[in-house]
Structure formats: C-alpha cells, structure tokens
Image: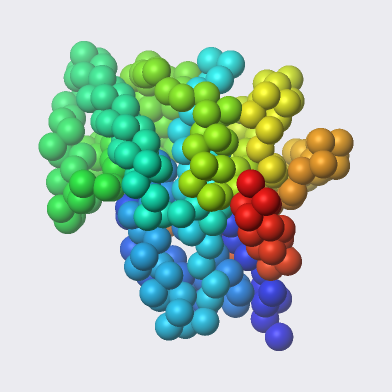
Length: 286
C-alpha cells in the first residue's frame, strides 16, 4: 500500500496563478504520489478547477475546488484558503476579478520600483516568460518576476530574488489596499465554501494570528505546511484545539523553479481524507 493512500494535500498552485504545472498535471502528480485527494487553491482565481476536476475523474483522484485569497491585516499579507467554493458563482467570480486587478496594480508598482533601482525588467517580459498567453482569469505573481530576475542575472535563485527584491521586507515590495481576512471568510462562505487560515507560521506573529481567528472566525487553520517546523505544528495544533478549529495540511506546491521545488512537493504535507467530509459539512452548514 502506498504510504499516502487515504491522504490529501489541501494546498497546491497551478499555472492559473503562480504555479509551474497545469491543473491536470497537479492532479496527475497527486495520483503518482498515491494521494487520494488534492486541492487546487490558486491565488485569487478558480480558473484551474474545471480542468483539474476532469483529470481527477479520469485518474481517480478526488479534486477539492479551492482558492487562496489575498488579504491584509496587521501590516502583513494574510492568505485565506477557501474549500468547496462554488467556482461558477457569478458574484464570487466578480470579487476575485477585483482582487486580480489589485494584484495587477501591485505588479506594476513593483516593476516601477525595480526599474528605479536600476533593474532592467518590464511587465511584458514577465508575461512573456510564461511561454503562453495569459488568460483573463489568470494572474501574474511575484514568482514570475523572480524567474525573470534569475534569468537576467539579478538573483541567483527564487529565494535570493525574494530576499533581495520581492519579499515583504525587500526594497521593491509594494503594499496595495486589500480586503481583510474577515471579508475573505465572508466571501468564501457566501460562495458556499469553508474558510481556513493559511500557513500561520509564515506571519511570525501569533498575537495577530489569534486576532484573525477571533475576528474572521475561519473554520480551520493550516497546521501542517511546508514552511512549518515541528514547533510550529505543535503550537498551531494547540491553537486549533483551543479555538475548536479543523486542522488542515498543504504542501503549498508551486512546482520547481531553477531545479528547486517551491514551497514543498505535492504530498509532502497531508491529512486524512476524512478531513474532506468535515470541510464539506462546514460548507453545507453555512
């Protein structure tokens, strides 16, 4: 028996946002790893879900339709995952389109900052680097900028590009107005889904995490994530118990750039498929 049978990875990205693989390829990778289920959770878009569902039917992997919504709280970018959203809901799709417009505004301002720093890079180059036409419901992210920075010799690899230019504490980073985690949770619920706070350890501010849990009231928390060590897992497991939250896990797989998988490989973080029933029940209850 494959050691991942009966397990699910609830956080993966595709080319619909800033991943490297198509939605179908993510599902096939999940199948090859022996996973029983995988979630497609692209940034501010649900464009990859239909293709993933079709491939899941073909190869026998349950696909969880999801999204990762960009929000802002406590001076930080906070991400909220949504599971079993109605990815055809017109009101939800309009809201996601507005978020992608905000992302485009940020991208333009970051490119301008890079140019002011003497970094010769354009948004056209970033889009061209995709190697395909950017669809209306897809989005460009910082990893795409990082690819160009590496290819042009301004950074050694993805992590170096973020540390030197693109990360929240780096000189080219730009903050734009975003919705709150509370609004994101409301949007997800209104679209028939279940909201979960993504990778709390990345925020390095447990007081803020508690504030978000108390105000936004997500149904779950991503305890197991590729950037969480054992101490973070234990801490957020205890927090989940304290607040009565579902515990989820995700690799946050984006594919490999410059030979390095970012953040982790599909299946590297997983929970039992029984969690899916909890996520569905919560969505139906709302």
